Length: 260
Image 1 (tube, one colour):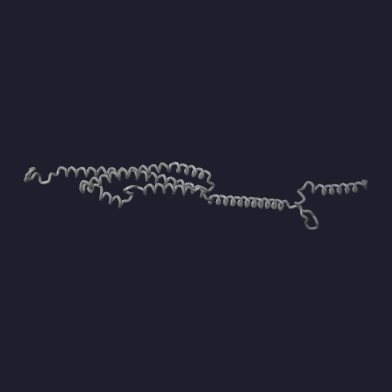
Image 2 (tube, rainbow, N blue to C red):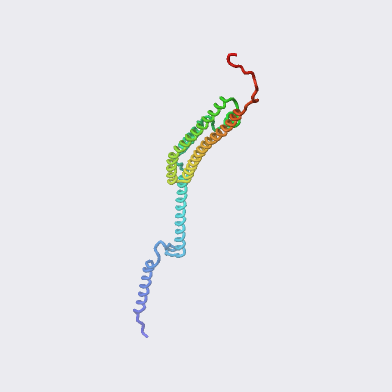
């Protein structure tokens, strides 16, 4: 059998061409260049496991950085909220409320004749009211009755003055209430809300104090008038008893005529 001397040469050329084409195509269809590293002898070697681990580590590091940024933002927001919670309320009604209470106290302190004092009231009732109204001569009784009448009139006048002062405080209380409600609605922190609430409670306490003063003044006037009426009845009974007291009756005596 005769061999063709050109066939082995063609076979070797074809094998060499296939190997060359394989070396050229391998970097193109494989992973990016950074996934390779040079091993011994200058050969390029690709480790897919190492490449995946590097990508996973980078993703975890990025996630940690994002978490730290979010934590810092939350802490900054907390600090801002704390600063707002510590901010003072810019409006204060304390001075106006104190002035209103002071005016009511001044009206009560100006009570005529009998003040709102337990010792003074006890002394007056001991000397001028009740059984004391029926003592002394006729002139003393008349003077005592007039004094009690004047005290009753003064008590009603005091009650009217206190009531007028309380009514005058209503407009100021309304103005302060509107201001405090506006401040509470626009409060930026817990401290401002608490301060606005405390001032509203103070305003309510002021109104209760005014109401108490008005009731006390009215009751005082009514009590003085009732005491005057009771004393007048006691004095009237004493006057009637004295009028009906004939002493020892008729005693005969010597009668002298004119000219004798």
